[in-house]
Image (cartoon, one colour):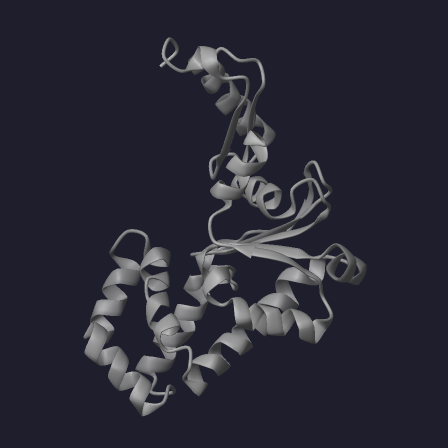
Length: 232
């Protein structure tokens, strides 16, 4: 790798979930320095990558809405504040896991309309025992829960699904963005990253407009935007 690639690089940027502290960033940068000969090496968190992808060098709030969710304030160079990320059991209210947790609960408690329950049962054929098995005995239960997001997306025109999404987004916005002053939300704005954000864009736009908050952009994959920034 050093002979074929390293000598042609003038910078290396690494964005990863393992970079949760300056210590971890330093460790990763040391590893990368052993692989690449360039001096400009920096390791940052996924959240930092998301912020740079949607905000560039502008200040604002970046929000991830994928399997889980998280947000931060970006000052144009670095993250200076971020919301506590407490995992799918206590948090992730803007992620697919939260929308689908509500859906699954409504299905099995017979709160969802009959036609939605019938569609769900026809597609998945799940029992209560199956759900418990996946939640308590199988790996990555959060990903399994969020895996029902395509059902929500396929039924966006249904009033029940619309109400579920709207109420969940309202709850997410009220809790996640309470950290940030109203001036930042209205003047600097929020950029969203992730599959859930992209799929639910109309609902996010409506919720933002209702609050008078500024929307920066919504993108599915931050990598494309990052590559564009660093290569231009």
